[in-house]
Length: 117
Figure 1 (spheres, rainbow, N blue to C red):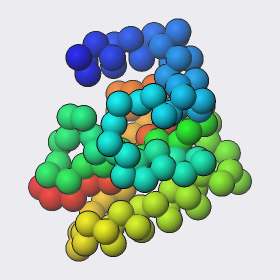
Figure 2 (figure 1 turned 180 degrees about the vertical axis):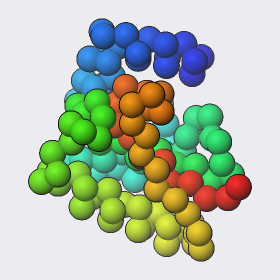
Figure 3 (figure 1 turned 90 degrees about the vertical axis):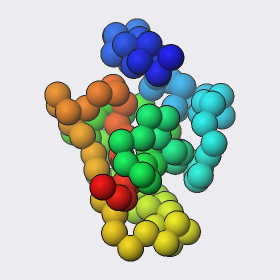
């Protein structure tokens, strides 16, 4: 099911739909929210690649990191959210990852908070 969603999301219409959903309909996304603010949604990755794997997504339409306005309120919210998740889950070691270009599988900016090998 997740793979079908990824294929659809990588079409022109799918990218528009995904951006619109995160920007205006995030309440309809079927994920257990760990954090949600006006600008960000954080949830466990549906197909985790690490023992601890959380996805953090802006609620505005942003395709990739190069399109993100560095003056937006998203970045301070991102770091505050990551800090609170690290504290809540008592992570002693972790990484915050953003993929771009060919490494970005999903056509909406997102970050991965991961821990463990």
